[in-house]
Amino acid sequence: MNNLMECLGPDTLVAELDLEKIEQFKNYRIQTGRTSKEGINKDCINIRTMLNESVKCGLIHKNPIPKMPFFKTERRLPKFYTPEEIITLKRKFDGEMWLAFILFIYTGARRSEICQYRLGDGRGLRWKDILWFQDQIRVTGKGAEKLKPMKEFLKTELAAEMRKRQKNGTFDTDDLVVHYTADTVTIKVRKALKELGIYVKGRAIHAFRHTFATETLKAVGDLRLTQELLDHKSVSTTQIYTHIVSEQKKKAVEALPY
Image 1 (cartoon, helix red, strand yellow):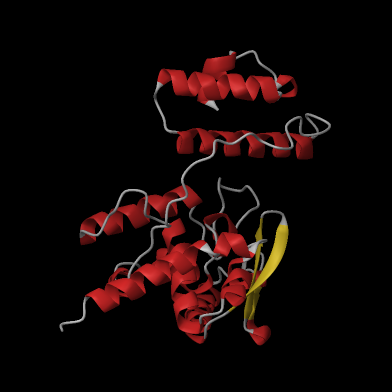
Image 2 (image 1 turned 135 degrees about the horizontal axis):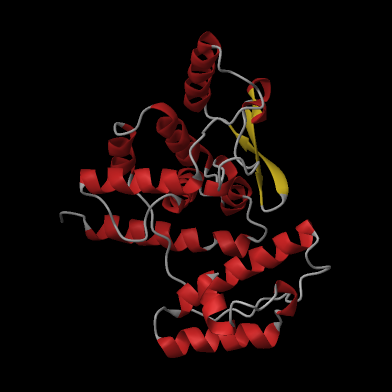
């Protein structure tokens, strides 16, 4: 929000924001030349989130900009990890970072569905969300609850951690599975990637979700099923992963030794 205040002034109230001011902000960011259109779009997403939260808190009656004006940008293929990189990373984590890692790679969950953003903000996956008998995990994201299938290996690892906490007297069904904040988890993943020599700029936590999508699509070839696993509202959002799989198939053919 610092960029917004820099442009509009620190005395600007949330209730004063409108479409004209957002366009002013976008033009200001372009003129100062300190970010790309993609970066400005991220700023606009943050502003939209702030406005929605302001409505929930009663600071404003309704969102004055229900349709945020984003820049049209070229859609890039998502960054993902190879199976070999995932296996290498599996040896790098332990404790709660191990839990966070396997939850990401085996459910395709978003960062905000597993971790709290700020300490004590009420977000994050809790033990009561592990539905042991249904082999499912209940996550909350984008204002809705969703059920994700729980792989047997993931179930075993979560059960082992639960028994460990029960033995230590620290287990509570309302407690968080992962206590780290989202930013802390991101920092730890980036550190691990750099130590392993496989760090790529822009590839961290969300790339686990892209990897999950790519690998499930490769495994079953069912776009609708992958859409449901990712909780995408539209199949067109999931469609981009078909381009990744197509590129991988082309590389496989190009690699033929004859």
